[in-house]
Image (cartoon, rainbow, N blue to C red; front, side, top):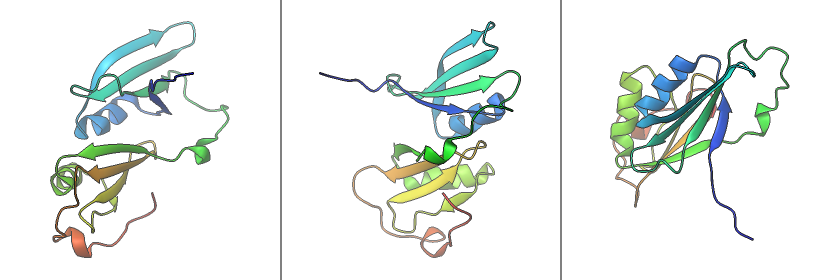
Length: 142
């Protein structure tokens, strides 16, 4: 029996704000489905050339009040990046808090506008530790 990865779904409160955040990570909209009967929109976003690995942003037009909240069972999304320091600087320059800085030159964590934990991993081997990241403290949780 074989299985194939399809996507990771996260519920978002503000579709445009969430799309902007994932856009900062380098993801682009690959598909959009508006479901009038269910009053929701699905937006699939993925890195260029990796359209088979999307994140599905689910936005309920009438909000999420009254829906069960089981987000505590969600771990994180993980993306490999070419330059962990450049990506973290880009995100920070655009107002994103780096919750777990890449002190080790290998791993960082940020959170989306909907509090989804995003792990960023350096492609290949870890980069040499460098400032300001090497001495930066954690902020919040991830």
